[in-house]
Length: 287
Image (cartoon, rainbow, N blue to C red; front, side, top):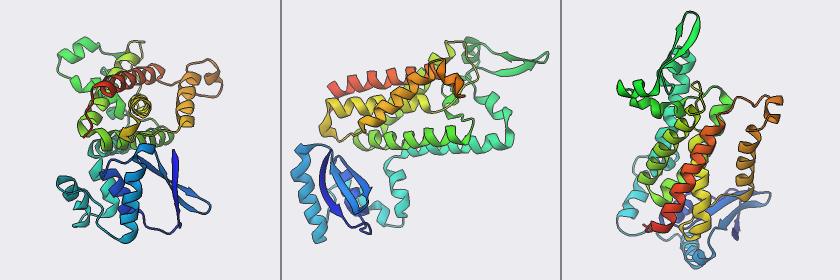
């Protein structure tokens, strides 16, 4: 990361942020004690950023000409500013919203929702839990169960942290590589992580964390292999998330109450994200 400039804390940078995204300039804003700091991801984009910042300071138009301009300026015509990120990342926003809706419905209907969304049907027979077979479940047409566990969350902390990483990484993928790429990652990592977890004999599991680890792997690999695309993830965040995954796989985690974690879903999602990142970093054509 390269420090570009310091702005007063009360400066409205929304227009500049939107323009930087529209021009595919990888950047990051941080709040410091003395104001807002603008950072640049790729030094090769320094001239382009400086020209854009200068135009912003002069009050000149910032958006690219043509289709990108009309899409970027759409929030000004009746759409609230706070909805702009959701418009720019609709797949990520839809996944996040669906998780929130499922969590809210679970608080009302409880186990009925869980039984309808586990990877195989769950019921009670002779006072004990009974589980269906995956092959028979798919043959009966319940194919949604391959993905639906990813939208289940079993507590506020579980939900909040998964949504935080989904929004942080998902916006980058969708902003730089488009909705189709984000949807592919969501489906492949969600299904892949669920199958990896089910392969261990576990049925009652859920959460978007497998997808989050896939997005982490994809964004990290892209930031290393194609830095000009604008992807960025702090190295300490990578270390933390990978360290957390390894920690929850150990017996020590049970001593701290973290033993019931879908580790295989995390690992499966990470593998999917790295595989797709490796493939697309070699074949992708920049928009």
